[in-house]
Image: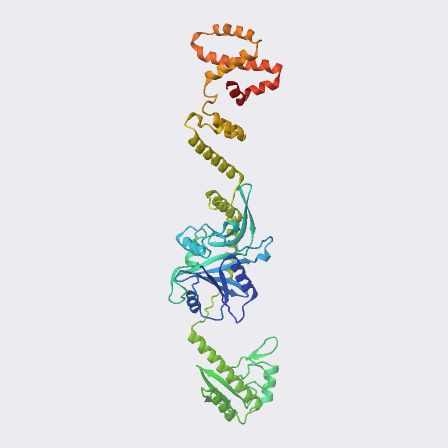
Length: 212
Length: 320
């Protein structure tokens, strides 16, 4: 059985509503996931506990100024660890038109991940979801990579005109991820081996050079 | 020499380099200040009898002011090391400051407690090694990233891309039997019926010529199909044999029409005119021409019967 975990990293002693809300919305998208609050526990300890409970992935949401601003995404037991920045988060209720998500396992669409690093990331993201989607649920989760920005969308679709068209209804939250670093092994800030780190001055020499 | 009131008046109303202006209260920047506030009681310059607690590298010291040495600013403060144990240190303070004012004594103790608290917290954090590293966020970089993200979003055409991907999956057949669109279902049904028919023929019949059952499948009358299969052995499709058709045509004409005699009489005339090379083809053409002519004539008489003639089923009956 696949299991996933979320945990909330709190900078102060209190966590704020938006971060919780974001976690619940994520839980809606990702089946078999659980939310835990991080009670000032060290990340390495959390990883050990998660391994004991046979979780397959660990997402830790960081917050700043009462808003979620980053995700540490750790594949367990010994997968890679990535850090994403969250941009332009829109909750479901703020959308113009939205539907209720069902409990069917969603399909995953991974668009435009072309490089080696991109494949790596795409695989990590795909592993977050069960491998046997229920097509009757018509749910689809999209990670669309465009110019190193990964757009997350969650839809319900419907084929119309005898399969010539697909109508989409948005279900979940919208947000954009930006990869900051990718690390081999589980989280280790001091001794971990970084596979890739976004270095602005060295890398962003050209606007047309992309890494994912 | 020391006159506290005059000093305070000058400092309070005039210029004091330690004053820090802030909205609710004024603060003092002097490091010897006991409370950090700028008021008469806790001003280190305007009080001759004054004491404070300070921490240097994790060790607390009690500083007591000795006004008699005010002309030696370097030796103005009497410094006593306080015990690491907080209770003992508190006792030390109350012993040392026995002649000082209650306010100073109390504030010194409070300050000591405060210092001990933050020392404990510092040690804890150092042991745990879980200090967050704060990284500054470049405002311009942030702005640039945001703009690029917006542009990327426009370039992505997300809905279009998702729809395309979904349709591609549908075409690939990822969804299997979930969707039954009419065309597909129809095609599948056709295939199935063909297979069934073939199986039946294989079991019942041996003749390969009778395999052209598509003709039957186009018309949905099931009774006819059965009849065909039963008769199949005898019946051969009319389209294959041109001679038969001609024969049949001839029969029809003989049976049905007496007026055709005129045309029959004309026929040989026409045949004689063209050279003999074309013979067979010409004959065929003429036969067809005859056919049409006959039909036209029949049309004039009774339209309903003519339509009957064109249909395949009555032919069989005629033949049978």
